[in-house]
Image 1 (cartoon, rainbow, N blue to C red):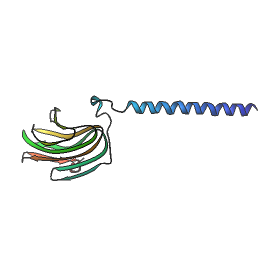
Image 2: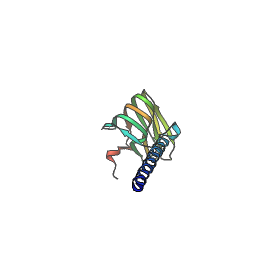
Image 3: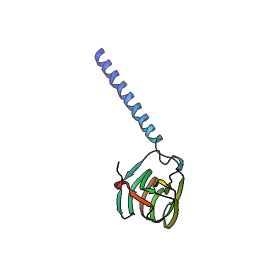
Length: 160
């Protein structure tokens, strides 16, 4: 009879420990979800992604996006202008496209659902165009026009 009681006690103790551990793991996961725009970029998630890229014209459709993702890498031999043509349809969440310059200066290109064109001065060196979102879904079309002093590559063109 003593073995039976000890077995039950051990099993109940294990169930209690397992339940407490499971609950605390869920809380830690919740702490990792970005709660505001300052936390965007700490976690990267992109689901149901479709990317079409042809001659610096990129079409991206995404189901759920959290964090920054680089669309283009830009190498400028000297300071030059690029023209970015864009159209976005964001169904849910916060969304932004930025240029991260060679000096790590961030230039906003556009936010949310919009359509337009923007001319941006790119400094000599390596820059990139990033998309950022928080619980975002939608689609974007981006086209980059650059002169001969600028080389534009997407992630598939990069040599790692």
